[in-house]
Amino acid sequence: RGGFTTILAMPNTKPVVDNADVVNYVHQKAKNLAAVNVLQIGAVTKGQKGKELAEIHKMAQANIPAISEDGSSVMNADLYDRAMRIAKEENIPVFAHCEDKNLARGGVMNAGEKAKELYLPGIANEAEDVIVARDIVLAHGTGAHLHFCHCSTRGSVFMIRQAKEKGIHVTAEAAPHHFT
Image 1 (cartoon, rainbow, N blue to C red):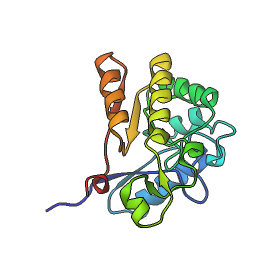
Image 2: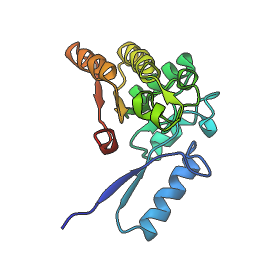
Image 3: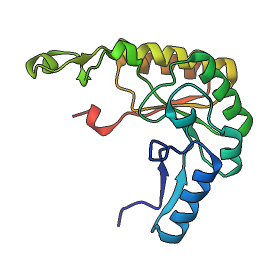
Image 4: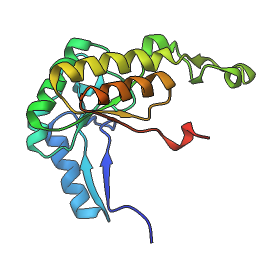
């Protein structure tokens, strides 16, 4: 008949899911009220601010299935490297949203003819490609399972394909609206 049996909830909520107490609260609330299984993903950094690691070990003990900053990338490579090492230890994947916010330059859609036609600021493909390249390097060095969420550029697909061929543990998906 269709529908969902299980969902993975992203951590970009109020409050941000960056500690075990919030994870436990969501899991308990879902158990009592939800018609489906709710698995709460934990944030990579406290408050999703990119400054300090969230309580990844404790959230893993509370049964998070993954960590993610959801709608943004962790711009600090050292911090992200440390998060990936913890994710590897805890045997949970890292879900990456790949966009260098500095290269995105406030854009709201892919740079191109349609953006020009609509007089909207575009985001160059390099904003995604730079982060995909960096994150592949970090995944290779840490051994973490890295999942790229909604990839949209030819360059990122090429790099992910190469990484997989080299045995780096990466997976990826594209969102339906990227095809329409």
